[in-house]
Image 1 (cartoon, helix red, strand yellow):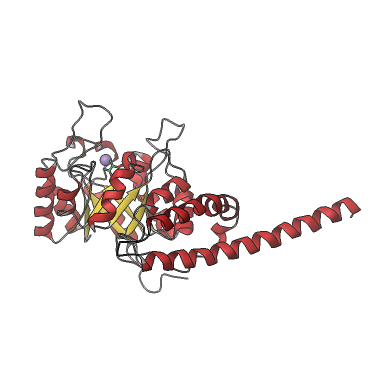
Image 2 (cartoon, rainbow, N blue to C red):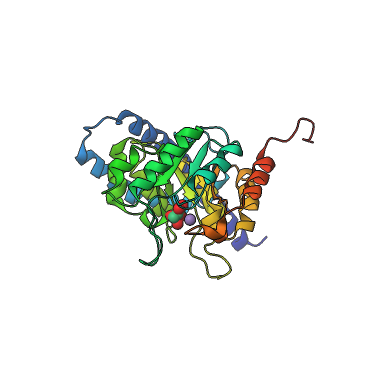
Length: 327
Ligand code: PEP
Ligand code: MN
């Protein structure tokens, strides 16, 4: 090896040692930050101090996150996880129609009959065009709650605006913040005070850092789970590009329960089940999928909805392997 090569190896080693030290410091800082959050679940806390911490995060934590964690952090196994919106330790499958519509009852029956505990369904629908179906609003959410209660199902549903949030949180078990609102900080700040667990979707153009930043508005105030639902890709085959590694990385970095939504994440019903199985294999915490008894009659997203039998098949595929099947 030439003298120059030896120098390069030596410098590389020095950088590796420093990276290790930085990594250990970041981990220590995280432990203290988590402790801090636990200590301040009751306001008032000191706003000036909060400002200071936020400033330091910007100067120290975020660049480190970019530099060290992206390179190294993904290799570290999570040692502890923040409290999420769903039961911990398992894989939660949430299914339901895109929207509350005229098929609400049979749609929910399908979910209950499949043996699931959580149903989804939008009462307010964020639509690209104003002439598309906008959802039934609060009366729809009331219908969803009533039907879900009758079947013993828990409800995840999206709230689009601050105006509707206080009434909506009374009717859901988990409130969903959709992709379009992922960085609606006014809504996030309000939800942080309303006491309901939040399922926070990733915005279609949110970086991991921005997504975690949005989650930080809720962190320590209400349980938060993240949901990767695809980002804007280049291939018109897909409605969105499901970022499975992004979901794994966000979970690793933020320690949030993390789910995927392969329905919106691909836009293709036939890809939903394989992506759910991939998410579980990757150690993620659950999935949110759309299902409809008559997909063609759904007022929104019919072509990405699972048919009834497809949902049943997916549930069967997720069931624990029979004893003895493991090698
Ligand atoms: C939804 O889940 O109903 C929805 C609109 O999803 P997203 O916000 O991810 O587009
Ligand atoms: Mn939908």
